[in-house]
Image 1 (cartoon, helix red, strand yellow):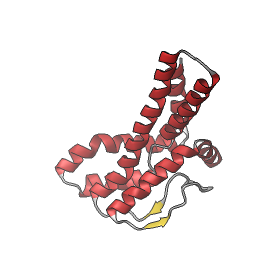
Image 2: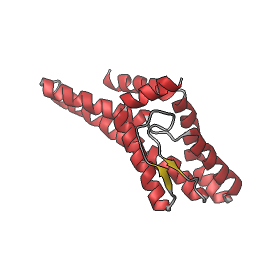
Image 3: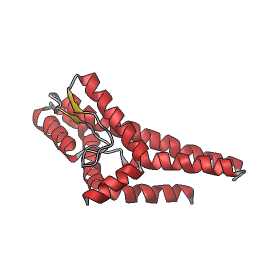
Image 4: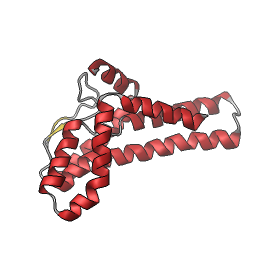
Length: 172
């Protein structure tokens, strides 16, 4: 499964780079030391950076949710723009079709690489639900649930299948 995981990450490298950039940005904002900031590696840490665990529940939630949110927002934007272009311009020219294909691939890669590592998601769950107050538990619950489920789906390459189905549904 690890070989398939790494192959999918390299096929969707723009999303891996963007996700790693957002994760490193959150680490800098939170002043958490980054141990290894290579985004494209040949192991399970591909598209993620190696960092210390966040000391506060807010930071643990941010390291999982902020990259997820911005990758999903980018996937929505880059997936919708070509659909609108094709709808209004009605397939006028090969350049337009090629541009739309590249935009779809970028949106697809952002979606596939949106979720955190399982270790980060489990740490977030521990920090929020064991050490957070009741308001944090209520406020962070939806995002934490999505990130945790998505982390497991991404680990077993199911997000690739979901993104492929969503992309084909948008096209047709």
